[in-house]
Structures are given as C-alpha cells and as structure tokens.
Length: 320
Length: 273
Ligand SMILES: Cc1ncc(C[n+]2csc(CCOP(=O)(O)OP(=O)(O)O)c2C)c(N)n1
Image (cartoon, rainbow over all chains, first blue to last red; front, side, top):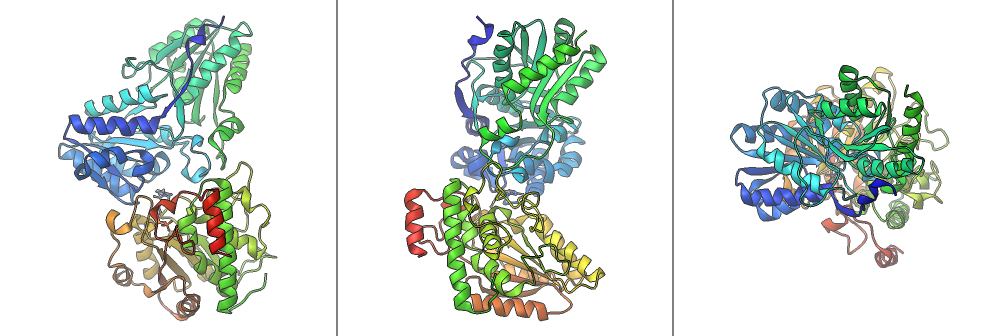
C-alpha cells in the first residue's frame, strides 16, 4: 500500500479566504493592525476585516502603487499594515514603492497578493500572476511565503503580523486541498517533509503541493519511492533540507504555479548548485495562459500529478 | 456592416448588443455585465457612425483606433466587433471558455482586429496617446479613442497621461469616461470620490464635454466637437447608468462582476425585446 494514503486531500477553503478570516481575528487581538485594499475587498477577503473594523480599513480605490506607499507610511508610524490586491496588480504596480519605501529601508509592511497563478481561471492573463514570486524574491529583506492550504495560510498570516519586517504572502482564488492537520506547526524558513522517499524528491509550493502528493502515489505504483517536500517559505529557502534530499535521493522535481524560469525552481537549483549538485526537472509555466475554468487551465497547462510524475521519470533517467 | 448616423437605427443596434451582453455573460456564468451595458451607446455610436474603419481590412494603416481601457467590459466590445463583421456572432457564447477567441479580457493574440490587450486598469489612456503621437509623426488622419472606467481613473497613471496629452496637444485623441458611478466594491463616491471631475480634466488642460452617455445624438455632437477641437485633447464625461437597459441590473453594484442566471437572462431578454 502506498504510504501517502495518509493524505485525503479534501477541498478546504481558498487560501485567500483563510487570509481574510485570520486577518479579522488579528484585528481583534491587535489594534495596531490596519489594512489597505484597492477596490477588491470582496475578492481578497479583507471584507471580513472591513466589516469588523471599518475605521482601520483604508479603501484606496483602484490605485495599487499609492496603496503600497500609504502602507509604508502607516508602518513608519508604528502601525502593522497589511495591503492586499490581486497579486498581478499589487506586485507589478506597487513594485517600485516596495523596492524604495519598503525593502531597502526595511519597513514593516505586509503585502498579500491573492488570485495568484493561472487558477484564477476565466478572467485570463491580465489578472493572472505568474511572476509574483520572482518579483517578491528579488527584494532583499522581504520574507516570501506561499502557503499550500488554509492551515498553512493561517500560520503565515499570523507569523507575518508578529514578524518585524516586510513580508509577501501569496494566496489563491480556488478552494485548496487540505494538507495539514488543524494543529500543525510550522517554522519560518523550514520546508515540510510530507512524505519520506528514497529515489527522487518532489519539491512543491501552493496548489502544486497536493499534486506532488498525488504524483508520489502514481510513482509508488511503478515502484518509485518519492519524497515530497512542501516549501511554504520561498525566501529564506530551506537549503539544508533541499541539500539533504539531493544527497539522499539524488534527483529532484520542483513544481509550482509560476514561471519556471524565475520562481521556486530557479531558487532550488541555485541552492543545490551551491551545496549538493543533482539533476533537477521543473514543472511550471512557460508562457502566458488564457481564459478557462481553473481546473481546465491546470490540466491544459500541465500543473497536475501526471506531469509531475513524468518529470520524475525524466529526472530519474538522468540520475547517475 | 452598414454604417449609419440615424439615431433610431443606432438605438436598434444598441438593443441587439445588449442582448448579446446578457446571453454571453449568462452562458459564461461569469463576467462583467454592468459596466458592459453602460458603455453600449458609446461604442455603437463610435463603430457605426464615427470611427473610420473597415472590417474587411482590419489593419488598414489609416484606420481610427479604439481601445477599451476598462477591459473587463469586453462583452460590449465583442458584441460590437461581431456585429461589425470582424469576428463570428455564432461563437459569442463561448465567452471565457478555454480556447475561445472571446477571452475574459480583450486579447490581441486571439482577435488581431483589437488594437491592444487590456485588463490591468489605468493603462489605456497612455496607449492611445502613443498612437496619437505616432499618427502625428506619420501625418496620418488617424484619430484614437479610449473608453475609461470611472473607478479606473483612480489610477495615478491616468493623470500622468492626462498631463502628457495636454502638454503634447494631442488633439487627435479623445477619451471617454464611462461615468456610471459604481466600481467593484460599491459606489465610487464612497470609495474614492472623483468630484469635481470636469474641473479636474479642465485643469489638466483638456477640452471637456459633459453629456448623457446614453443619448446617441448628444454623443454624435460631442464626437464632432472633439474632432473640431484643435490644440488640446478632448475628454467626454459620459454620465451613464451601470447595467443600463435591464431594470434589475440598473445602478446595482451586484452586477459589476456577477452574470445573470437563467431566470434573469429570460427577464432581461424580455425587457430588451
Ligand atoms: C489595475 C487593476 N486593479 C484592479 C482590477 C480589478 N478590477 C476589475 S474591474 C474593477 C472595477 C472597475 O470599476 P470601473 O472602472 O468603474 O468600471 P465599470 O464600473 O465601468 O465596470 C476592478 C477593481 C483591475 N482589473 N486592474
């Protein structure tokens, strides 16, 4: 029996929903928490915070760059601001403000990008964010989080509120399979080994973590033992855990709903080149997508367990 | 297509476009009906009466340019492009489906007759100013038009572009603000008020015309005035009703981004018969 039957992968809340709920809880606990949104409160789910604490919710209108800079000013005055919009807009339109006003002076702003990846679906490429991890990781001082499910998101938002310094959290639109028990604990900068394995390691983040668990099942059926690691902290990266996996399994696949050339995969490859060179294959996006239902798009653009399993076979063939 | 200046004929075309918007978004079960319905008269007057364009030669170099900067209102543009003969009417109901040319937001990769891919708000005014500058360099009679959302003009880039357009005397550019007073989260006045809007554009150096954006004769007169205005760009502040033409959608923020269900489609089409 494959080991990973321990994961049911039942659909849970979207990570943006978990973000919104947790933010409203935090608002109750800490009067210093303030929130900025850019005409998307009902989509980013800051609407829960807005209803509970209207005086601490700053509706900035459709003006993301201004919102990020206003958030920086709030932070410079001792508030703990969370600013949120679709990841595609806040990370691009607000990037320069994050660079000069937040990253470089190390200001305590929390940036939450929702509707990331192609799984936003029907709205299409202009609203899809597949460059956001690259942008966020490019900023020194930023901690970059990409939780896979509602449990991990709740932790990520709470961690961000308590940490002094800039944080980016990546959330999604659709319901995410539940991976963690409600009482699971996480450590910043530490990946989670979800499944042990000896032949190959599947490294994933976000929605692809569940796909890697399923892929390990497919591979188990072929006699291949796959280790699965969830990377919720993209930066700082858990280089130690990855190097250990490279040494012990000798081959890796990295899977993410992001451009392959600039996301988690590129960072893992850099870490391994430094500490424990090993063959790596990459599952991710290579071009702009199109409109479609989230499920159809994830199928069409190869963001599923079968593609992860195929990449694992390919990398195993390269393993010496 | 048969071009016309007859307001009654144009009104008939508007009704047909509204029916497309309802059936299209209804079939997609998602999309943005409200802001599509508010811009119908503006687009129909442009495409049937004002723009110099030819569906048989979509890339004719001297054509006038149109950019829908508020790209989420794609259904109105798709209805218009289809009725003009640029794209098939039969497949309008594939809106937002995988492989459809009718993408969630206008996408030049799928419809080459589009001038620009839009969807990230705040960018279209700059784009048509670039087109206007190019037309001047080429001594081309091309005029360039852009439809902006009222929420959209909260973006700072719009005001950078406004300053640029006046400074460069871009009199071959005409912007239309679809002033339907509602954005995504609610009423614009409650989110980030734009008033005094006409005074803002005036102070930025634009020729400003305020009008009822559903009054076809008024739109025709305004576009003629814009073309005759030299030395500065023109902005039409078109007072409109979000969801116009469908009683239960009118002025109702819910229908910004919610498609009509089966029952609502039937009701709406009855009203638009
Ligand atoms: C830069 C950017 N921010 C946010 C959005 C999400 N969004 C889509 S439509 C919309 C509201 C637009 O309101 P308005 O411009 O008034 O359009 P209309 O009411 O005419 O539909 C928002 C916030 C976007 N498309 N682009």
